[in-house]
Length: 128
Image 1 (spheres, rainbow, N blue to C red):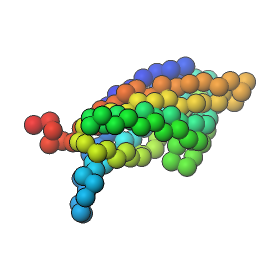
Image 2: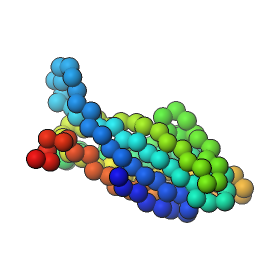
Image 3: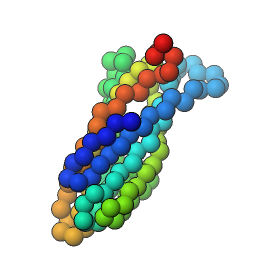
Image 4: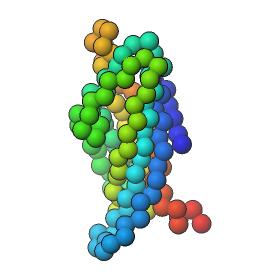
């Protein structure tokens, strides 16, 4: 697990390797990640957008931008949290991701960038 705190918002990331059971001609590797966003502030916030930088150990770099996460723009009350799970496909068995969330603070419509710390994605067989 890895975490970072920005503007009283803590982002915690856990990763999981998901072996592909069927024919895999593209030799892709699937990694799931669970993210917990904890609002330590006294204000209600809403996750509006996400930005990801995805680095594959074969040299490929991708950027992903979009509204919300997994089809939602969650509202997180003070001292509450939101958790979701998503996935990333890589062409190699090692990679990493980092990024940010754009949050809206409801009290004053302030826009905040929240850091998602860099996290490693590594197939378990690479750890031997």
